[in-house]
Length: 82
Image (cartoon, rainbow, N blue to C red; front, side, top):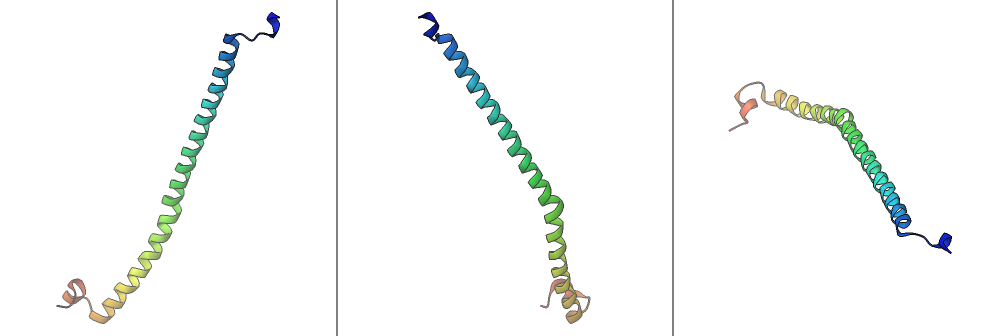
């Protein structure tokens, strides 16, 4: 009969081991998530921001050049017509 009885210590040790595994898996998943966010942040700062900055700069430069051709380079160009 004693072989079929599970002691309290055995059940606690298996629950705590399972809890430890779960905590370890959660920690690893959290580290992977943070690493993925860091990679996404690097992608945005290295690829996307320069691309859109270049595109936006070209759009603004066309507007500035058109204004320069229309007004010339002087007070009206810098401060607008009064």
